[in-house]
Length: 471
Image 1 (cartoon, rainbow, N blue to C red):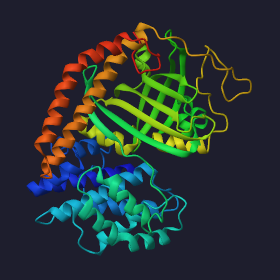
Image 2: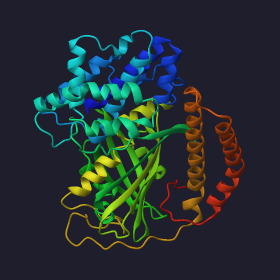
Image 3: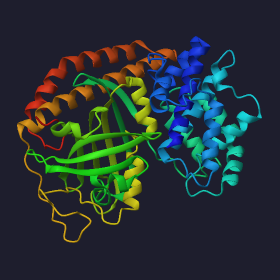
């Protein structure tokens, strides 16, 4: 996944350019596009490079270098193409760079666009955003060259805040010769930071829909034992554990993922599939502390869910909405660096790629939605796999602690998002007294009501299919 490193360098170059410029206008523009950037540890990029590429550290991230590497990757028939999520992140980085150049009063060396070498790299990287089924690499470059000026002008003039990416930038590229009307459906991740079990952890949320995939199709491939077949670009192996099922009915699996370079994370997980209703299903997962030593110890928090709901009222008909959340802490990496890694590396955002892709082209014999249902159950790829048992009722131990964490993370993210909305308006000079009063009221109400939300969440029985911990 060398392309992950190159896309990280795009954002590392943006960070470097902003800090070297020491320009209030550039800093303000960067904070609108990448909320939290100015408060982040300026060494986040070098931190990731040093950890994952100690023998070849890129200490001075440069946009031209990153884009040229991406262009070469896309043009090489032996390396494949970027994933949909990577294309979205790349486009965001290119567009943000162009916006920052447009507001800077002086040149930004890390984002320098002078010379034919940069233009060649830019066109080649824009070509990488073309659809997978597009024509040859030379044709993609030709189409990217034709769209180049309009795409950059749109970014420079209209990409003012993060929300403009979906409202303005993405539609402009879809309508351009680069995509020729073919949509870019991969979601961008939304992140916040919260402390879980004493660890500064990143919350990564995604939401997406599909009109060509049904709920039943998703359920058939979403079991974690299928993930390494669903999406082997990220998931290296999903191995069974003994015992297979915990006393509270959560299932166990040992996950190995490759996020960047050759480095892997091996993490013991437990998961619980839950059928909410005939048209809604959930796959919940959490760190399995019953045998933490089975992993490599790098991941200290790993919990989340995949919620799937039919949008047409029939699980067998196409039309589904998916919401995912991942809360993760990787040992030895700062919070902002973790956010960049899990978003760009796909650890927290590959759900759209691997769920929709695998549902459309499923493994030959996928594990059923609620496998395993009994201890020692036969391999699901063999004939005669057992029929799934109904989900057991919740018990206090399966919902008390996770309910508190769930309520707190939702409160933290809501307040964070509200702050960014207010900050963006203030930086843009459009903040009114009404906006400030509304946010103050919301903040006070949230803080006043949160204890009651926690109490209600912790004392209301609910499905054990919510993330939690076993004691």
